[in-house]
Image 1 (tube, rainbow, N blue to C red):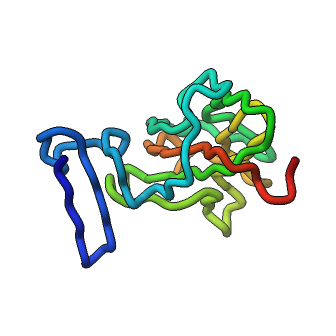
Image 2: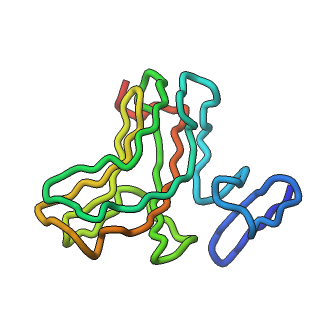
Length: 155
């Protein structure tokens, strides 16, 4: 199994087989320090994969005081599990991800995630300003994981 450790960035990546890790996409790694591995449940009630990677292009117009659903992942675990979601701006860097919520603070535009007993939802929450440029038609990548541990304080 190929391995790499980058001491400058505290990055650990473990690939599968003999593929060069520099040629792999983040979802192809067996272990990647961009994720915290609490244990992703396998085959326990889920409808969709409980970890994944996808791309998204923001709408060409974003209305004021509006919420846009980016993706809904169905887990059906019957409790509110711990989770994490990361966002990457393709215009900024293909290798840099930030944890949600992620926002443009002075604008009121935020990328957020919420979970309940059946689904994880990733969405845009826009404040009082409408947008037709700047934050529109931008490419983003998202990484998500749903864990087998309930959120503390939730039943």
